[in-house]
Image 1 (cartoon, rainbow, N blue to C red):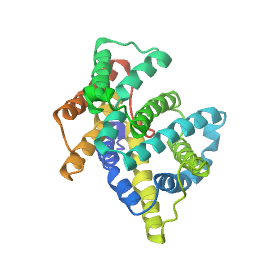
Image 2: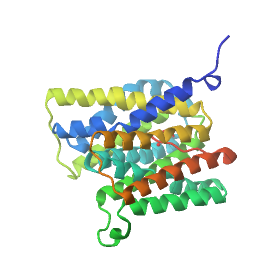
Image 3: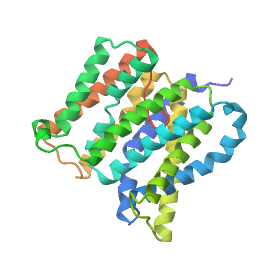
Image 4: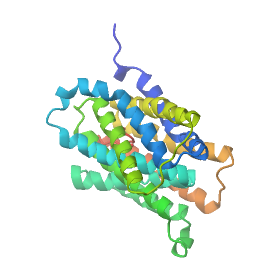
Length: 302
């Protein structure tokens, strides 16, 4: 007797593993940047190689996306920017600060759901939004935020979460399109944006040696591509609310790993902000049970 994924533990296991991988992605990204490859070049090579690897499969399903060019373009722009800004903020910013600001997803999810899907802003969701905003203020320094405004890394970390939330809306509205087609659009959109930024002189082109180039390709074709497809597959076969709770493991993995490796230094105010946003993310996910909503990431979404 054939067991469907929806009736097995496989989607949960896959999503747990892929969420942990996203939360630990800062390790290879920061290591690669330390080897001399700039963030934009790193993103272009990794996302470009991953996108090109699945492009033949996407082309083979071109009939299924006929008439949906606008949707794929939206995914390429929103998902592409979300991934690019996520990578850059992780490469050049404080790991936990970036991940926590990215997890302002409860705010963007609530706003987007209300504006575009007509979802109600009930008390639980409003409480989650309030906790997320307060947590972000604390992470950015609390009262000190008035004396030292957030920097550009903070801005792109927040905008990454906003773009992911918008990308989620497009994904939810195009559930009939092949996973591989949407993934290819997102990855190639990310690589294209990185290339345009390099051409515009935002950052100098990196010319890493063969070894670093090989490591970057391995990250793109291994870590990035496999994690992206695994997350998408897991989310596709799980209830949105359950998937959203599991995906929060990304933030937990980032916080724990950065702390254990001595990368993160904690203060009471930063810890309070992190706890508030983590709690807000859980509340937002739980609120999806009655709404049938979902949250996620790089196509999860992400």
